[in-house]
Image (tube, rainbow, N blue to C red; front, side, top):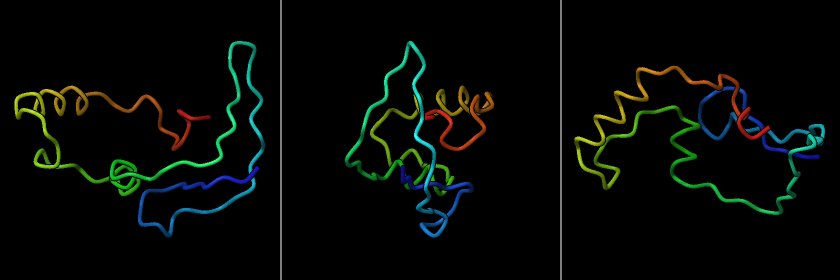
Length: 86
């Protein structure tokens, strides 16, 4: 099957159309066929790996600092790009 794949953070040039093996679901999983998807601002920020200033979100500043401390002190559990969707 065809998939858009990226192996490093960066501009749209890092996106590559590749042929990948179709995943086979386990007994407790299902495989969903997706015909179309969207790209939003969060996807762009994630791909560029940039910090998002609090002014971009409508959330109270104390909550923002709490979230930054919580997520900043933890290392990512998934270090491979796209592994959470595999």
